Image 1 (cartoon, rainbow, N blue to C red):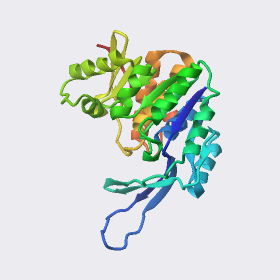
Image 2 (image 1 turned 180 degrees about the horizontal axis):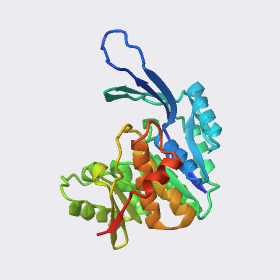
Image 3 (image 1 turned 120 degrees about the horizontal axis):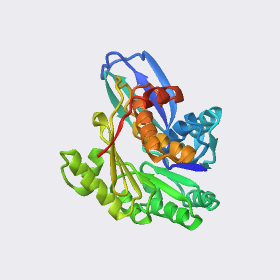
Image 4 (image 1 turned 45 degrees about the vertical axis):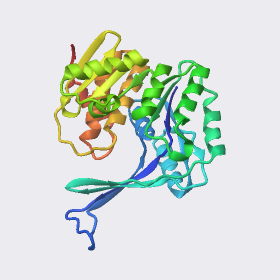
Length: 303
């Protein structure tokens, strides 16, 4: 079973306005409310691919109920911890450019955090836990480490999609996959990366530090996949970018879902790239049909 963990979910409230007038009255052309959060995005893409999964994390208030109801309506299994505070709302304002206004998120109490750790204690060998996004300040800087320790104790694998110290500290525990983009990789090592060869160099450093596999997204330049001594490059399918939210999460969902379903790591890479592109070219997250359409456009080359 695949489990996704979203520590700070949100309702993503997407608002489209033709001509934004600051200080004046604006009327929407359209709006859309979606369950948001990196792990939740991964769950939704896994569901499109037919990869069974359970979404975990913290939800509270009327906003939390909206998210849970939406996921269950899509037949995604959920097992969130109910918290006292309301889940946040993030505003994505589209007016030519996209402006984001993200909520701070709720305070998670110690007993609520312990309930999530307890839920993970039933993990088994062969399960995969996907840890995505930032950690709310109320949980402390070591909460990912606590989650990873539970994974190790139960024999479950874990994938981590975060940045900075939380990612570097997780590497010693041998994550199944890490997925920095090219900017995040440069920031991790405090360097400027100008070439594909430099990306490979620093990607290998993540392997040396403990990661089993590294997936590096490079926007319009495609993606790199580093596993063992092998390095592969995938191009990006052609399309018009409509959506900046969730492409990286979709890449992880496409990769892990395909890897679990058929065990073919290069097909997992191909589907991951197609899934990320399908989301970038859509108003919402990728659909199965669009992913399949784009898979044939993804060419993988061994470097």
